[in-house]
Image (cartoon, rainbow, N blue to C red):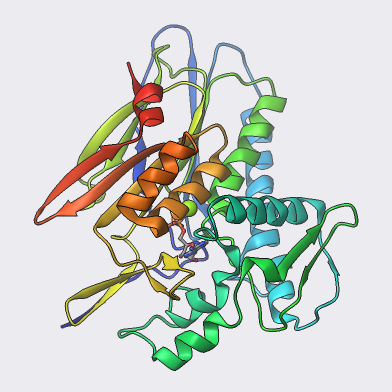
Length: 342
Ligand code: ADP
Ligand code: MG
């Protein structure tokens, strides 16, 4: 049987987590803003006792999101990333400081995860139909996979943010920041809110979240981790957080099936193929959302066993949901239990 279950977005996103709205009656204003961005949706909840210029904040939030999109989208040909990707030059290419720092940080996270998270997977993401081009109904050939692998590798990507510039030493290499950009955008909006003196907020972009302070009921923000079997309709777990970020990667929103096998959008850079294990989703808690986003993808690549060993070794707060027949089994790292302990 062939079936496709695809969404065609700049960031093929998983809205695994929902902010649960809380309304307060303690003299607090609960300001909500939401809209489309990066092929998904964003929402910002601000809780404050003082007045602030909502229109100005709204404009600044849109500006911030547009900036990220102009830097990192692989879905618009005029973005900085697209220009870098379409160039076959192996010279340094000047880029904005923000993009340079994002790439530099992504290379570091790639090294930390032994290449499980790797933004040079671009050629493989495209080959498997999870990029801006057409989607697939069946896997590509082994030869095509081998050819795409030959154009990937984190060691072939360099960043020098004193210039600032980035460089590839393989002409065919291109980068894909989709596993990282939503978190990064959530962090940038959080900085914007911090700079405005806002102490209580919840920023969510396509399921990746960054929280600060408390909700309108003056309690921790309540975050629902959704069920991989009923995305959008059932909740697997609720966690309560103050100052923390949450990101989830899963195999159930962006995938195709061929001959009974699921091919999802997380690619194992070592094999050049979508991950093949029982992990349905990984949720990671971290200080910043970009890091949580990248680490969730990395654990998704590493799989339930190696992923949990890595999470324990690096003190990563990870929550894994595994397919177990028709049910789901959960696994939590020590750090996850510590951070979500009520
Ligand atoms: P989502 O964007 O749906 O929330 P992720 O954050 O896990 O999910 O990002 C998945 C996207 O990241 C894929 O669609 C692909 O563009 C890209 N990607 C796939 N595999 C990797 C990988 N191993 N390292 C970095 N990025 C990846
Ligand atoms: Mg991610």
